[in-house]
Image 1: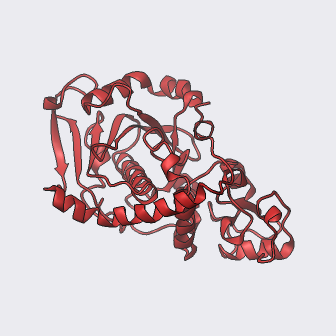
Image 2: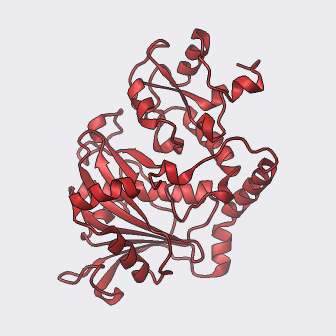
Image 3: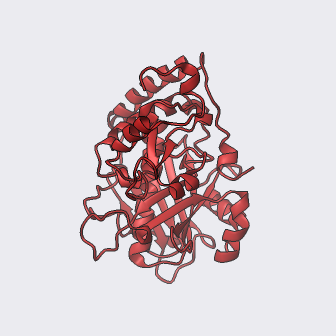
Length: 353
């Protein structure tokens, strides 16, 4: 593939047998998403960064997917770690992560992170039940999908949950003392196989305060399910804001109308998961108290306050690596302004238009 012309690199093409075998070798013969065994004849070729978003036909941007996974991904742009679940245990994970970070650095200043803080239209997570105390292979029944609720999914989600999303957004803005027009993103988690809604999140990212606010107004799942999904979702938000947008988070505020269940995974390492490396405040109603949507902050108790940053000097020291990465990304962004290739319609991808 080293001999390719520029026209070939950025156009849709048919890959020959040798090229397909080379791509399949990257995942040791399996679908990068679901782990299904593939041959060079049964595989489909996925562009990690779609051609329409500025991707290429170079080997580092190509991954093998089964037909169903490629159909599900379509022409959307996903953060690789949010989609290629079967790659988690493989060496290529770090490589595709760096490739995506380099690509995102070309556009990060233009991206509306407050409106779409998850970046991907959806995040897939392999959630093992607590009784399985080991890492398992990809099992569809254990996969949950947390998707952005745009205008096309809003009516369905409200009918199932009974929520009024406009009221949920207004309550979160009010509770966080945010601007009445501040963007609030709504996400809902469902099982990949049953499509049953499990939990709903409202996210308000306050850049000026360096604060990430996650509000849980509804759930219909077990305690461990709520804890695991909330943990994975919060980690995905942090990874995208800090590693891709190069913006520091001073505090994470988790607000719950559904009790303590969503906080189960935050106070210890579960299946080797690390604690969140940022200060976190978790708030839920006092016993017998009112809900967030009906009360004020005095009606809630603080569950955790982990490692608060005590001064500006401490904050600058803790976030120094983020600022250094931002400087590198700025250099890539400025260089890319002279040779833009492809475009990204964020609202269309998220189902808002």
